[in-house]
Amino acid sequence: MIGTIVGALLGALVGLTPLPRPRAPDPPRVAAATERRLRNAPPAVRPAVRATPPGFDGLASWYGPSFAGRLTADGERYDPLALTAASPWLPFGTRLRVVDLRTGRAVQVRVDDRGPWVGGRVLDLSQAAAQAIGLTGVDPVQAVVLKG
Image (cartoon, rainbow, N blue to C red; front, side, top):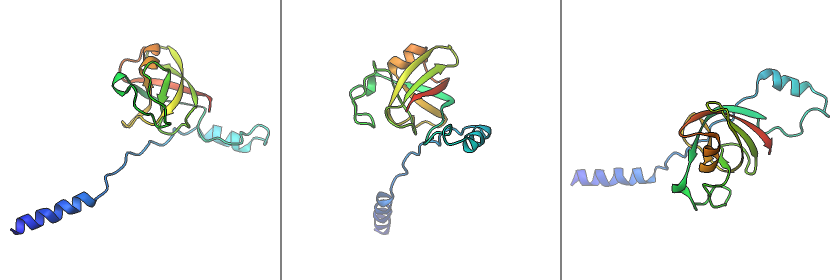
């Protein structure tokens, strides 16, 4: 009887504990020399808002047909044939040029989702974007912000 009561109390406590939410990784840092140069530049040269770095390197993966039709974080339906990407920190609508450093091929994508939620990765590409650059699993990429 006591075991049943203790089990019920523990079950209630476990049920009340919120699950930890996945945390997006911090955006890559721009080199300190670049930061100093921008900080010391005259106002005409210094960008008004610099929320994201102009480019970054990291690992990219892809997500495909099993997600087709699901809503992305910006409210669109995911289309595996569209040239889109998921980023944990870039604003929706940001256009990127992504180069697969293994194949040397490039593709332009638009950020429309959040992710990847796997540590160490900076982008999740749509199936079409991954095929365009020859990414078959997880590859090192270089991304350059074209428009954000």
